[in-house]
Length: 235
Image (cartoon, rainbow, N blue to C red; front, side):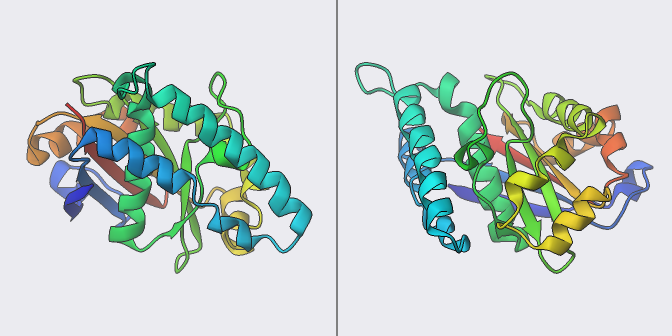
């Protein structure tokens, strides 16, 4: 993957008021076939299990994570071994967005929610998380893929819906042991960040940011402590 841009947005330029922590990242996956291999390799790296100090916890978490990896591998490719982007698109957005936030904004990485044992049925909750350790903030990420479209509206609206349903608080038990207690305590007290990750087209960054800033769901997210927008160019 290639990180094309990382911009701090001054929302005052768009007539909006928010915290100083509003960022836009743009990512190009490059070769999508290689992207799928890259993602599967990352999902199969279980080094994060070392954060747990109990062998029985490590064993249990590894069973769940391995099942998820095996299921995704079969989902990402058809019977001839060709990539199925419509099935893998959301995972490309999730993994590369999370990686971009870690690399460019210095967040701590957290495994995808599915690897932690959550079943992806219906609307279970956020797709991924990162931790801004210096601010003791969890960033809750929601990834959306729409073929040939800028999917920021779908991601932003789901973020607001999930928070209204308190799904960010429901994930605290799942995140315990992977992030600091202080960050989890802040999350429980509604001090946290959000990351809207979405598939994007060749729309210019200037136009994309301007359109997002006029989106009512984005404007609603400005009350949160930390906001990241990640555009992943998948054509």
